[in-house]
Amino acid sequence: MSRLWVLGAGQLGAMLKHAAQPLGVELIAVDIENDSNLDLAADDVITAEREQWPPTQATDQLAAHPNFVNQDVFGLVADRVTQKQLLDRLQLPTAPWQLVETAQTAAALHASYGQRVLLKQRSGGFDGRGQLWLKEDDQTPIPEGWHNKVIAEQAIGFDEEVSLVGVRNRAGECHFYPLALNLHQDGILAITLAPLARLLPLQNQAEAMLAKIMDELEYVGVMAMECFRVGDDLLINELAPRVHNSGHWTQAGASISQFEYHVRAIADLPLGPPVIKHESVMVNLIGIDYNHEWLAIPGAEVFWYGKQVRPARKVGHINFAMADRAQLLASLQCLKPMMGNWYAPALDWALQELSQ
Ligand code: ATP
Ligand code: MG
Image (cartoon, rainbow, N blue to C red; front, side, top):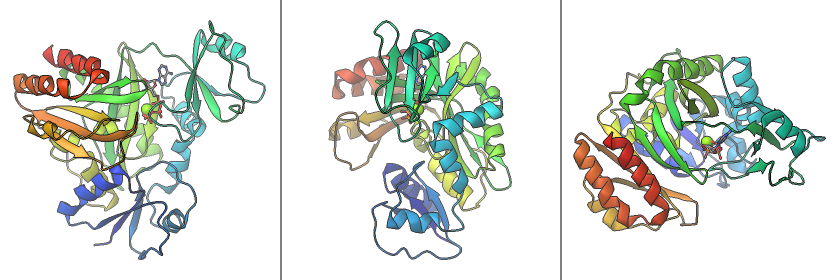
């Protein structure tokens, strides 16, 4: 079988490698700073764990390979302007937006969108970085140098945030996981819960939206769609043309994880439907030191990324997928005192959500 190469050697690349091994697929995650000559064969297949990359010896070699799957999609999704244009063209609902052009002023944006307007970098932002709320009351100005580099979005008074992770193969066969419920704190994903019975009525709507996008792009692999739920409607916040943090729960909660699905799709192996095992909780480890006591919590499945710990940096996650709801709640209660103040409201939210 041909080999799979992943552009990027962060945690997503590592988890893809971990998923590929039992399938008998050789997967090599390449650090973008790798300056060696890559031993690429003609029938090797290339994917990426990130939407964009600087030109380096490694990325140039990988990007030049004819079997770089979804090559055109990365650029399109990485720029919020072309991503939003795609959604508009497909008539899929998204937050009202515009490119902040040279002559644009905060006052004009407030006139269009109201009191609060969110500026988002066109590309390169993640975990809420590179974003700024313009508040009419504070007369926040558009920062110098941001024109043409950001889009402005209307503030959405959403009820909650959900995401859908799906997979598509070359033949157009698609599968989807149940919608996941996501809690962000300070613009960064803290906890994901899935599946949730009360989200079931939205499942068909969400699947139709993501299928439309993946079909339009003739996409191959796993794609994630982050949404705002406003009443019974879903508004697309953004897309990720790759495995996604809100799909990490599938490592414990589904027969086929999102990482395995991506490998299967890219390597053109049979997909098959995912069987959901249990209600799952994924807790991101953000700027927190490794605590080996986590391993002693019943049901805790710890993934430590081996990165240097810095504030607001994702350094791991813990999955819980448990058949017994009471045990799941007990495990989250057990985790709470180990996590510090920042996590308390997020864990309380999860406990409450699962107690309903
Ligand atoms: P990611 O880490 O998922 O890549 P990101 O930094 O690219 O995130 P977004 O997902 O666009 O950025 O925004 C981060 C969070 O900010 C969202 O999950 C949501 O909580 C909030 N947010 C984004 N856009 C809006 C909006 N238009 N109205 C209200 N809240 C928003
Ligand atoms: Mg996001």
